[in-house]
Length: 186
Image 1 (cartoon, one colour):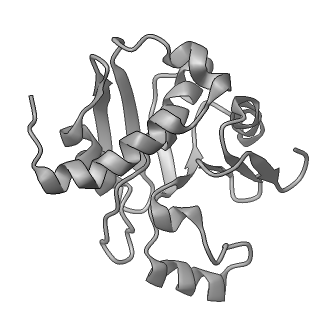
Image 2: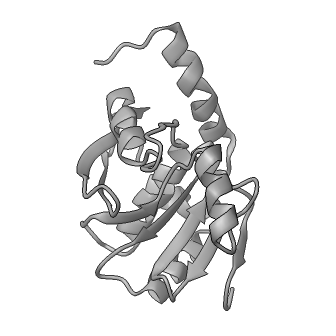
């Protein structure tokens, strides 16, 4: 069992409290079984890193696994790392269970530092000034065996946060903010 000190407790305590207080009614049925291990597999499209990890087991988020996820979802431009919201991980887990997929989640963008976000705002349209990527609460993904449209629809059906649809770029944005959607039909 991993032990965490006071700093680790404070670092993750806020995220855990937010997780416990955020209603995600659309995904509750899949997430009810507290004892079932939750495993996710990632492929970072910018660094070519892969990770398969059990991030939740026996009713507890695993700190060592969360740290590995934080690393693979880091800002690949600056190397900065931020704690990723466990609710976001649970949303990803729900997508994999709902679609009966056991494959890599291709990460187009995970955490973004303020510096990277500013740079992207200057060079790309549609980058929010107060992006949830900068808080570790957003991710842009692809899943090879799902069309972007199908992935988008599954995310919308969760009603668990923001969903952006980017068919030309072939990815879906998912976040733990308020329920909303943008781009094409919602």
